[in-house]
Length: 56
Image (cartoon, rainbow, N blue to C red; front, top):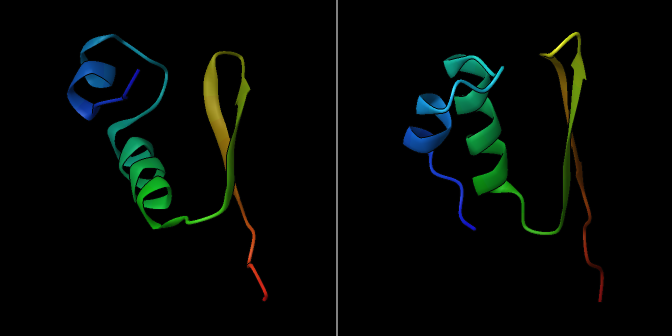
């Protein structure tokens, strides 16, 4: 299931518009790796991006 900004914003998720924009920019720029979201008391407090660099 694809995530779309409009659906997330309408559904009342505990992520601000500013943080959501950061998250989508990170997701669009990463080639290999993962993004981890940390929540505390129902609020997003940290976003981590771990990217792998493939060496041939």
